[in-house]
Image 1 (cartoon, rainbow over the protein chains, first blue to last red):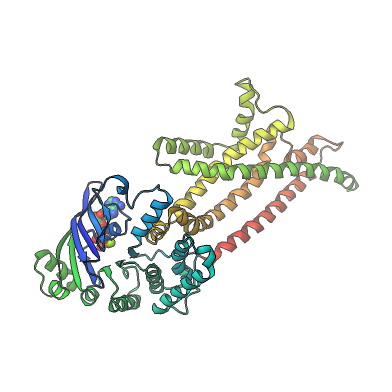
Image 2: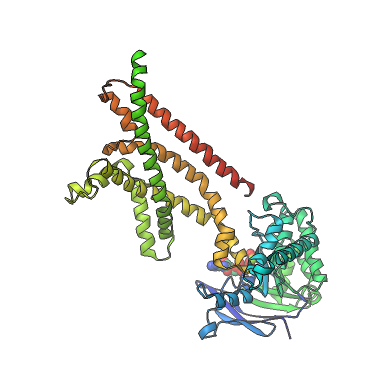
Length: 273
Length: 228
Ligand SMILES: Nc1ncnc2c1ncn2[C@@H]1O[C@H](COP(=O)(O)OP(=O)(O)OP(=O)(O)O)[C@@H](O)[C@H]1O
Ligand SMILES: [Mg+2]
């Protein structure tokens, strides 16, 4: 069974159809790269998966559980977008959201917290809601800290844990952001052009840690304009154009021998540039 | 010179009394305008169009007209036009009217500062929090609030220092704040007349008060300097 199944996701902003019935599936431990020209809807798709945008139609399933269904009526209708809900529903909304992680192009680190605190914050807030939190506070916080330190260490930032975001380079910020997303152990980690905001000499360090995650069989969806990286790291590539999946398949096939005319043209523009 | 030394205790006594009135007006204005300004800010950002339009109009009028005129209108309008002197007589009534005028005026200025602070936090902060499974309340308290405060403090400091000086305007409705006290010696009070030097003394009070405030607010700003 695939970890992720996306069926017929549609999204319209005002009058423009940004996503026109997108369907995807992803197996556990696999990496999916999404490529496509500017405005083709890649960011919107990731935002839908992370419940930052509400699809107008479609279904999102993770591990067989329906997390979102535009047609659903009754109690689960607004999920997970409802703004007002009781504690029980709130817990459920969070639980659904946490299947996914998202790394933003612009990092969006919390500036008032150190690298370590950025990684720990969400876990701490989650833990505080547990029934046994009061009794085991010290122990739980200790575990959270240990996990955060391990993650930052893995990102090559063991000597940067106490630094605030403004004291870090773009590449370091993005690696903190990756650690922050990993701390919640999402089933599927999404990246939206993780290196586009970086100086060229800093992209390498970020791509390297993503590659290491791929080697550890982290399930990921990576939107990127780094074609060589997409080809190299992905198990599968999706080419999007004008809100549709035009072509998908094995990276060797899509990059080496594209079937569709539009894919050819897109790749030509990239290799030409 | 001998005359000045003889007059000194009387003048200082009067200035101190006036200064206390100034302080009272200052703190009452802040106490009222801080929360009212926040309400007005929420009103102007409301998705309910009529509410946001009306609040924006009020803010525009209040910020676009002199505080001195607002003071006069608020003090005299109920009594003269509505034949209903709500403020009551005497110093207490004048203080009440002045407080209301100052609170409304400053709340409108503060509301714009709050709005800038609230809208100045990038949406990415909220989105990052949501993706990390935080509730909207947690995002507000743990992520956005401090960033808003950091954006609000510098322009708020400027307004607060302006407020100190603006309290002098309350003199227009004869509130016996410090300017009133200083000025009164020009015309003769406590047997002292035609003396201009108490006015310099008055300026000195303002200077000291503002100096202390600048120092305190500067410290607060510095405290928030650890992040960007
Ligand atoms: N909130 C919004 N309101 C209106 N239109 C939007 C909104 N967000 C995105 N769009 C439009 O949807 C289309 C797809 O945008 P999207 O950001 O998903 O593209 P993208 O593939 O990520 O492009 P890029 O490679 O430049 O990041 C664009 O035409 C954009 O203008
Ligand atoms: Mg994009």
